Length: 341
Image (cartoon, rainbow, N blue to C red):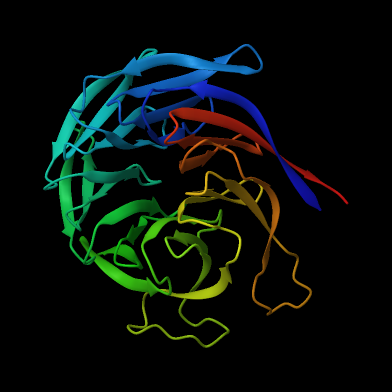
């Protein structure tokens, strides 16, 4: 099987770089943010065209690095270089600024809602990961934990698709897995194999595997081994799963890989690279039950954007629909088609 990456539309989003794109949970709105300090919401107009439906520009005084949706789709969070996190709430067809969370010392690099809706996580240049807990009565978030396990900038966060387990990626070349235990958040394990900054990671649909990307121009696939696993892999404390690197994908990227997404609908992995490219990988069918996983490149566009590709987002409902954003100020929509040989 081979694939094709088909460009559907280019959205002229800004005169400056676009840092992040994120689909809402039902795939009807795409949020974007960037150096112009604006959040834009893009929606379908007719069957094929996507247009800007609304703009929010009164929440941050510096670049907005990241936007994230709650799983109910009624909240949107933004993380800024002004050290603030803004929470927006749906009121009718509009999103209204509900609250601003402060605590980070400087630039906030990423923000993410947990699947349960109970937690919001933020991270930044101050090397910390903050966990904020939602209070339904007050309709607000309060700090539940400040985690200082990383020794350098924390670049990106990713929640487990089913559980309140958080992964963080850092300039210190590691990925940390954080778990809540008896109302205390702690680092359950540190994933160490990359030789340079880990820019991003993503869980597969089951949450049992994780893909990470790095300044070292490789992708790594990590497998979680629960206690009493058949392989006999034991954790240091006997409680938390052990994460092991089971596959390294190298030789495809010419520059640092800034983002990676593992599509929950198709199982495809997409990468955003500093060489202006987007690449799509597919897992090969294993002929032996216990053999390590292997992935092949099935589609790519070496000139996907005119400059660095910063972030990707798979549409959660429409299989094969991918959004990308870049330093060139554009957002692009792509369709991935897989073809039988």
